[in-house]
Image (cartoon, rainbow, N blue to C red; front, side, top):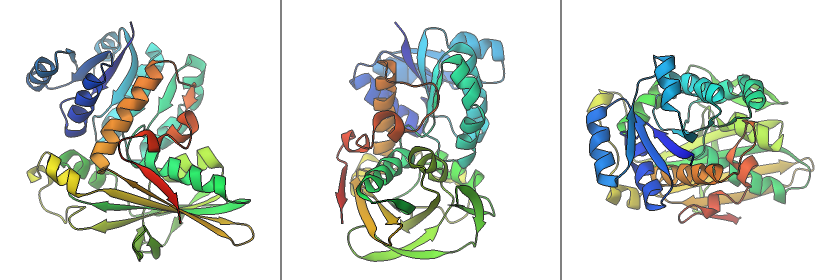
Length: 328
C-alpha cells in the first residue's frame, strides 16, 4: 500500500500535520533530518519514520520507496522544494507542500512539463493561504459577470512560528508585484488599500503573495493584486529570529482566527465581495494539507502543476475545520 510521507515532521507545522494524519488513520511515514526528534514523535504516534537529508540523491530516491504522496513541511522552501519536486518526478510520487514563497510556485510552473510526462502532480500550497485565497477567489469569480480584476487580502493576527518567520524573512524582496494584463509587473512599494473583512474597512498593504500565480492559473483573471492586514504581533519586528518560540500555543491559536476578503470587479464596474472566516492559519494549514494528502492518496490527482481550487473545487476550503465563505 502506498503511503503519505510528511517530510519536515519534526517542525511546528509538520508535527501538527502528523498528528492530524495519524488521527485520521492515513497510511503515514514521518521523515526529516533530526533522528532524535523523529524517534520521539514516531513513538508517540506509533508510526514508521525515515531519516534522510536532501544532499544525497540515491538516499533520497530510495527513501521514497512505497510513498505515493509527499507532503513537504520543511521550510524555508527555497532550500527544499527544488530537490524534493525533482525527486518526486523521478520516483513517480505526487508532491504537496505548504509553501508561502513565490519561488516555489514559479518552480512548479517550470517543472510542469516534466511532471506531466512522468504522471506526477505538483501541488504547492496544499494548505494555508493559497488554499484559502484560491477557494475564496474562485467562489467570488463564479458570482461575477464577466470578471476582469480581483483584489484579495488576508487578515493575519497572532504570532508566527520560528520556521515561518525565517521563511518569510528569507523570501522578502525589494520588488512588490501585481498581475496586470496577465503578466507579473513591479508595483510601488507601500501601496495601501481599504478593504473590509466584515467589521469595517481597514488598511491593507500590497504584498507579493504566491496567489498571484495560483489565482491566475485557476481563474484566468488578468489583473490580480494581493494585500495583507496585520493585527497585533503578526510579524516579528527585527531581532534574532532563532529566539522566537517554536510556534503559537493551542490557546493562542484558538484566540486568533484568520479572515480573508476577495473583491472581483466586472467589466461593467460592478463588484462582488466575498469574505472567508476560518480557524487560525496554522490549524487550517496543517488540517488542509493532510486532507489534501489523504484525497490525493485516494486517487484525486491530475498530472502537472495544480492548485487546490482547481483540483478539489472552490468548496475545498469550507470542508476544513470551521471555515465559512459569505457574500457581502
